[in-house]
Amino acid sequence: MSGGRKGRAGKRPAARPGPAARPNALTDVGDPVLRVVSRAAFALVMLLTALLLWRGHNAPGGGFIAGLMTACALILHRVANGRCALNFPPLTVVPWGLALSFTTGLVPYLLGRAYLKSDYGYVSTPLTGEFEWASALLFDVGVYLIVAGSALHIAYELIDVNPRERVEDDR
Image (cartoon, rainbow, N blue to C red; front, top):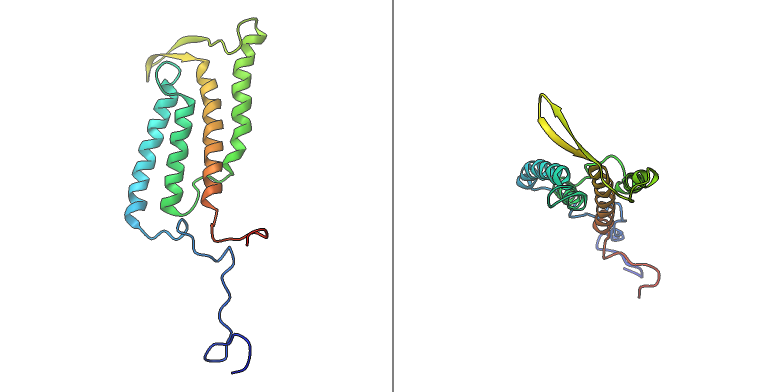
């Protein structure tokens, strides 16, 4: 055999797969137990998230912890199933959360009260009985959207990193 990199049969060795063809541990999920358990865990974590968000303005919890718990549940879903549960990029909810949080704080200020001053009242329904509502919940929802969107964006960017890829400046 003369020159070049030819194999035994005279063929060139297969080229390395491109980035799209490289196997990824998070997209080649083959563990059915993880997928089944993650469904139940996802549902339970999201219920806990709703409770933390709902009770957060009166008790420990709130938008920050609920946003982190949502991000963890969605990361678990992606690891277990190899795909994102959202149909949109998570960073798109951050501006909505910023607008909601800012507006919730601005409205009392425009009405002559302190910035972020919360208002509350009681509502009674046949289904739930009497419960308290508070404008702080809207602020918490804004924080929830900011934290969940940014945490998911950071995590998904880190998940998509392939440390074997080289850039032009690597030697």
